[in-house]
Length: 107
Image (tube, rainbow, N blue to C red; front, side):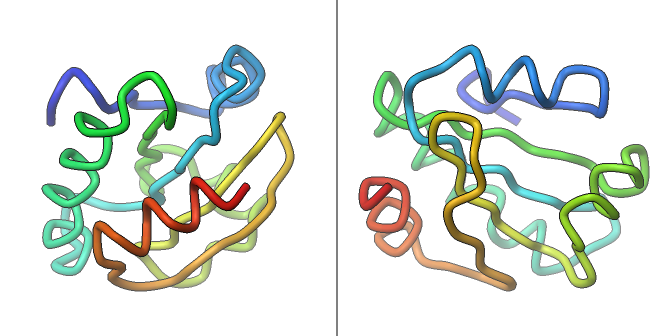
């Protein structure tokens, strides 16, 4: 994973969301998930291209089950979109780079 993407946990989730004015993309994933591995390079591209205007984070659902439960994550990858610390949108499954950017910039 690139330095452009921030790994967050239950301990750092709220602080990470509140420490930026940018829209935040949160990818709920697991290492054993095929579609999660497919979307990972797309998220890296978004993180690099939109650095400074969109923050991209990842939450490993195996290690952070409390967050997965809190946000009702039932399938992965689940992508949540936050603005000003509030959940504004979500998507389940693979999204294109353009769709990820459009959703984040629409917040």
